[in-house]
Image (cartoon, rainbow, N blue to C red; front, side):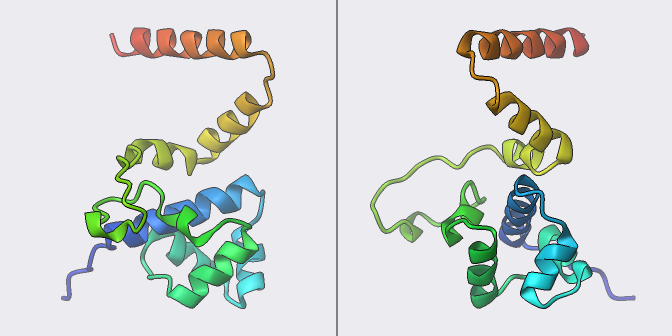
Length: 138
């Protein structure tokens, strides 16, 4: 029996960013697949990192999802220091943030939260959620 090879962490990250952006736009895997000339199962494999997304395909996806290609690499794990051409070195965002945002709950919460215009109310909601989390971990 041949052992299954685990997806590359970068491929997994890029796939999760594709999923997050697609969900932000309210687009189905089927609709993205149609725009790319693929089945929804192929899109699913891209999003899981099971299949690697080639450069030209990633360019196509970035156009359909209306984001620059660099969007898919934001917060990617283990990006070599020399890969940044502008000389800036920023710390990658924690993976749990992008993992959370890639879920339907994370996306729904983020969309709803950003529609709240009152900054004091937003702060109170954050305080409330932090209190709930503290009490939940006891």
